[in-house]
Image 1 (cartoon, protein in one colour):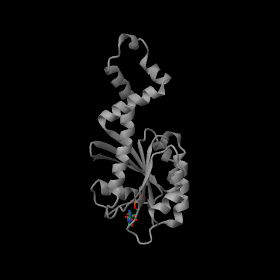
Image 2 (tube, protein in one colour):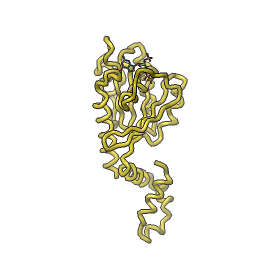
Image 3 (cartoon, protein in one colour):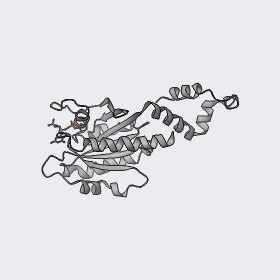
Image 4 (cartoon, protein in one colour):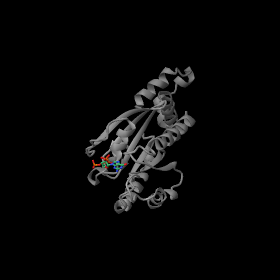
Length: 216
Ligand code: G3D
């Protein structure tokens, strides 16, 4: 939601003459929480959530988006930049940003953090060799100030592959249980069978919506 749309909404609300005497743009600058509240009100009304989907390359991000969106998963090519998908999920419109996870692209992830409501971190549960790398990459994403308020859903994907690590062990390696002041949830899933995907999206949408409605 752009600043201009928020300003327009506040303008349309026709503040009392006394309040109008105070330049409203300045009031946002003076009070960032006022800006956050106005933004939440607009988002809650439009029921739009912005979801960023990241994780190491080959974890199954694109396949998950396609599966949830009801598209064929027969041909998936590696995400070299990013894909944006707008999906209707219950009463909500989700803008899902699926961003490529190759090492060379990770430096660009921060370009997508702004205004993220929910972060989906996708893990290849069958790739125990890269689980440490995965934990380090997640830890550095979670340090980002712009993502401090985002709900975090971890999809432990590829559960259909024999020998995949179990969800609890993945939560341990990723250090999820040590996270404080953060709403997080981990769900085992398979983008191939569809198992777990709706559980995960349900949790994320509800968690984001509760937070946004509380502010509004
Ligand atoms: P990415 O977007 O995270 O980079 P992709 O990952 O969605 O491109 O998926 C990478 C590969 O993993 C694809 O196989 C895809 O079919 C496979 N994959 C994704 N999710 C699952 C899953 O849940 N189970 C299994 N068994 N495979 C999965 P290819 O062969 O095209 O590289």
